[in-house]
Image 1 (cartoon, rainbow, N blue to C red):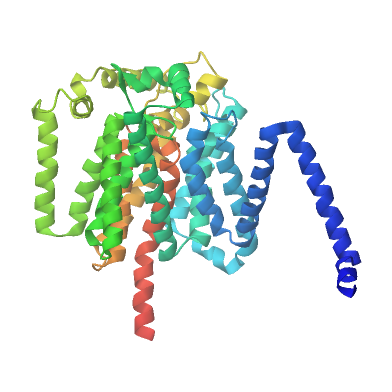
Image 2 (tube, rainbow, N blue to C red):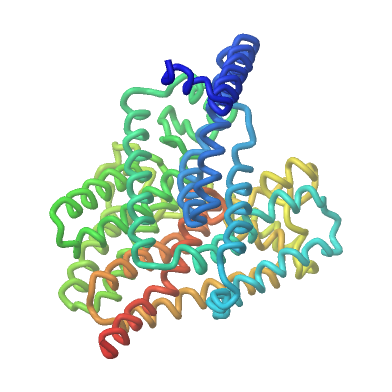
Length: 479
């Protein structure tokens, strides 16, 4: 009897009534809203839990951002929702939480050359609000995110809360696993076909760019085949270089399988510009390795592959090989000639506009907010051409200065590092980054997820990596 009485204490009674009330409310909502209400409630609960994790451990926000970057582009084909804003929300929330966690003295890590270049570029894009050319504030707001906002927030966050070699290893796991899934899903699309949502997207939006002479350019769960091909090539380079040095058999097998499948994913994407990522990336690695045998062997392999595409017609009957061959024969590529004409047109228009036409005036946002203008009606087809149109020759100089600083400093630091697995990791990142920078001339790779967020994390790891080795040496000497 006493046990029964203890069950009905005041505290337990209140808890019971609250749970009963919540159950009734949930039942009513589900009954009224059906499956959508159920999904919404589950999403609310999961979202609340994830936000709690970010509040306790801000680095978890970067992990979530990486996962979001892989999935948001494909989700838009199934649900009419601005999933792109999830990236903004997660980055901003993580930044706010981080500022409460980090001590003032720890902010000194932001006093460095990379942060200075990123800061100058960000301020320049903000100053574009005062560009004398007519432009839309709303267009600027949407377009500046890809131009500089994601960059500066990501760089700050990595410097402050995601700045160890363990974080780099976690980044690799997320990156390679996500890309492996992307490669497998792309292969599924090619051999098993598209689902209803993908077929609808292809029929209404993507047919003119993703069905070439009756051949599907595979896009997996990414925004388009261009982004899919780029991230596949990016991952293939990094995975291959990591596999060369890693000693664990399981990891080596994982890296090799991922690299091979991602390389195949690059091929079936039909993205010609992505071909330059492995060409440039592996060339960079051969030079950084400082191994004459590797250098000579690598150049022979790459040279043979290039010559096979450039000077022969071997495999011409295969669509994928034929499309890759057009990448190394630009003079015979009609679309490349059209791009050159568009660039000439932009050059004439921007001749007296050193600051460009304003951010958000070219490409997708230009067509949405200022249709009919010269910039809006001229396809940029390139990340650098897009920045040129928006920020002018002045902006392009600032942006290229930032990229050159990243490349020159990273190359010098890595080249002079002692041979180690850490150096191999940094060589993998640097080789991929170099390939992405070159390939962004052909496609707006650096302005789209997930390549952009990976690039931003990579450049900070390239900055910090050599310092980890120096810190190890100092710890060894003092111990």
